[in-house]
Length: 442
Image (cartoon, rainbow, N blue to C red; front, top):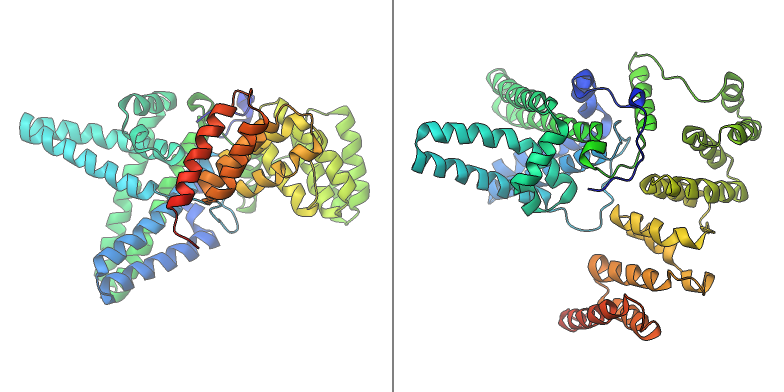
């Protein structure tokens, strides 16, 4: 987890999580989550009651749902505090976090059992209490780093807890209350509903509360992203704007818009060109206002004028990169490229770092589009070896295209023998060759 967004004034920081409990409880109530909760609950019930090896199949359904919860946690930690209309996990590799969480729970259970067996019942109870305290930190570390060793590392867990501070204890208390509330509600429903109905509803209740718990942990990570060094995708001002806007939709107070009433009126009337012209004029006076840039891009995308979109992207993306907001720059580029498929970044020095950020966000298709034809567009660029290395690495590690990866690695090592990446490229070419030989024939 590395910092990527500059510090933002405290007044724009998201409110403490205990002030967001209504949002935490209602987060799973949006359509996408409810559909998934309903589908997973029915699938788990049917698998356990009617299919061979029902226990195993039911456990697999719960692992799949847990992967969805991890996606919610990570998405929230990156700054997306409001539920998406449809949440689609864009990762291209397998999500092993649910399995690793099960392993973590087993390790913690073994630690408690050993403490009780060798040190006595009191020591076992103390160990259970301490383990219960670190479980949320372990889940949060696992969600972002996806490494079992990191999620079990006492130093890493302590750093997360101290980074959050005393509110971490309040987080544990709220999570415990959510967990207990889920259990009691499920038991209560079981007494009043037919067995087959209560089985499905109990699963839905448990899943609903799980989504709330993982959203809460993600929110706490985002609230403390500067202290914890979390790489976020939405700056604090925009996240706060989105939160207040969502609150307004539920009867709260609307956030003040950066646009003046006349500009908003033009947009509402469909006079997009005039509204865009007004924002462009405002940008000349307030160039550093990223919210204004975001509004401007939205209007340009609605207009669908390729030249204006490309011009603004090639002004806004460099600004975001200078501000160390690479993740946001990737989002701006992706949104513009949907409207302008042949969109190109004009500054050669930005392509490789932007593609690298896209790769870190698991947006391999975006990274490839950025890298495509780079050596032909910028034949004298010093970034060409790095572009070759990144493209080949993605092919090797994410796409399993070992033959093509090997060709690119070999080309890099042959064309740039004195470059610092040449030796590593030669080594990876051999690795890719061995993997290609071992791979089954198509």
